[in-house]
Amino acid sequence: MYRSPAETLHRLTRGWRARPPKPETAHRRIARIYRGLGVSALRSVTTHGLLWTFFDLASGFIDSLPESPA
Image (cartoon, rainbow, N blue to C red; front, side, top):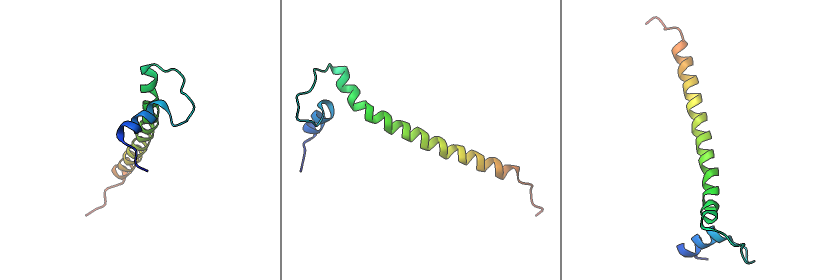
């Protein structure tokens, strides 16, 4: 089932339910869209934070190894 971009935006701002929506102001409609983006941003920050934490730990461990005589 194809949905046009306008219909997708309408469903994001007004919801997918068939019942009549509550009266909403513009900032509440925008907040509904950004609520999902906040979850995505939090997931990205967490993942990247863990990645760089492990990277720094591994780097520190490698730097602390004694040098082998070559």
